Image (tube, rainbow, N blue to C red; front, side, top):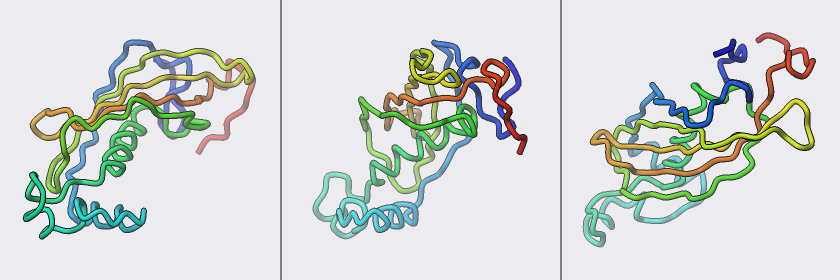
Length: 166
């Protein structure tokens, strides 16, 4: 593999279709994460923020982590190994699924598979990469997954760009 971006991300040319990244970062999620995220996003769903409601009115008996927090965490965990400093933009996410719940106190770890890539038709310095992100809890149960399309920088020498080091 060639030299990564000064911040650590990989360039378009560095991604190989079929490669699976096993991300080294993990995160134990907390009640504070759930409360802050739900409140910051104005989500009053008691399934996330009301322990009494969950204990008396749900099949789970305890709060579930906000699914959009889980989605963000899954993609965030992947950034350090893949796209930090080299993403121009996220173009979309699809096939988002949450096959099992995440609870306060669970520890999340993730993988990312490179599904495909193609050069940009409109920008010589960029390409599109499709990722399949997967998140698992401490029992290796799949708790979230999605496909993400990212607009990625090409290596500067390939396009004549000059990148200022950090």
